[in-house]
Length: 445
Image (cartoon, rainbow, N blue to C red; front, side, top):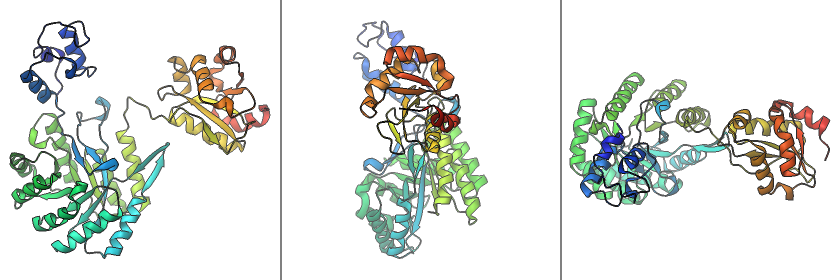
């Protein structure tokens, strides 16, 4: 749980020196408690106080990084049980598995399928995140070879799924630089696996047969010096996984340190439809990583969409970039539509402009991702902001006319906008669905 301002104030020097930019130490403490300031702003805080505050204010679930480079996966730093309390910080990673009992060509082919699992949703690009390589053969040399084939054919981080320390070590010798996730340590091999994780500086999955054993193993592994951990409760049936995931999150938020790490779940249902349902449950209920076997886009797209819905910040609407969008290759005489950058609003307008079969330009004004009427009511969709968009976007260089179409719901803006911008303002339909008939009846460059 986060510290209060008064609890932080007790650790500060109480000099009221103003070097932090606040008038008093109490004001600075209140800013720290609300996340509006950094402890680094206080040059006089003691090392002991800094250590105490850093430890007390650390997120209950540790940040764990898997992989290297631009596709590195970050998990953890979660602070709430329910998204509406604040937000979830890092989306669940979706991993697709391959098996070392397959031939090298088959592995390369499936990894190629995994690489193509890329989807455009509301203007954002989403994809799976990891490739999991299973030691199905039980052979260390074959496992290492399969891992290398997968690594050579993808830029996604890898999960090395083997409980044989010899097989894991042989694979790590080939791909340790890519910082794969080792999966994993159990009661029989935790010392050897912890040694490998520490030697190669890679994150490690710790698996228990139940939550009590899991907690005990985590304490043992952390005592050995491993701090980048992922938890596996050992459950595989959907009901057991859901129960364990919920319990681990609840205990982690109560600062039970052995459970203060992200989790991994495995979908093993042979029914392909039920497998997708199970994976959806795990995404919705706290899994840090969900491992599935299917690389079929029809199976993965529902999971990507669910993840987007669950992990969207409820306090921050999805928005598109505020810039010129060209629909159907418009020319110099094409109409210019102004709207807001709320993604749903923009895509409705863009879709209806496309339906009209009349090429046009769409200019979404930056309203912090809120809709037309909400933006107008909040003072974020104003004649001044629209004028700024018209002047700075470069639209004047793309068209030979000076006419702009605004949403009919904010017709009240037309007079002031025309005065400020010098553009002739046409009041469009109240709903974007009316654009096709409007543009055919009213548009003339």
